[in-house]
Image (cartoon, rainbow, N blue to C red; front, side, top):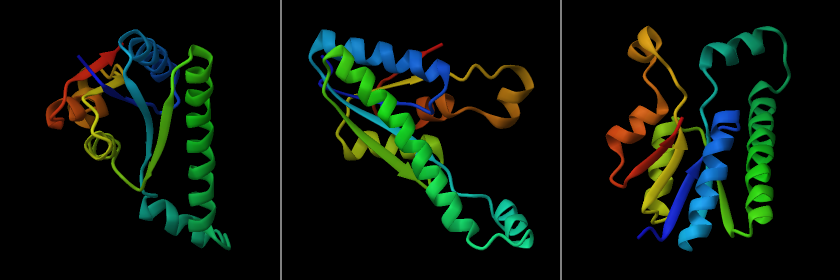
Length: 148
């Protein structure tokens, strides 16, 4: 059935459930796994504010912080995969909108199923902000399994 799962995570508790279930599914069906986390570009307004505060290297500091956070998130997935006996590659996509990074990674890694969490936005927030899960569902060319 599925040969290569892409498991997307943002490090949240709900994403952790999707990671656990995605790894269990991969183990059950003998699929390869790639885990991805995507970090967005730093908003220019925030960057300007940090520069006005006299921060010496705000962009470099931001990039180091993002890289450290992504490494921590993906290390958690790697540990969980190892614990479950599942081989797992990891990818950090920097400076992308999350849905775009997830879909792009699914293409470049030739994944045939995306596993991710729903972030449970409801009502007005969902209408105004949308959600990464909805965007991936709308634009992915491969099936998407969403955990709630």
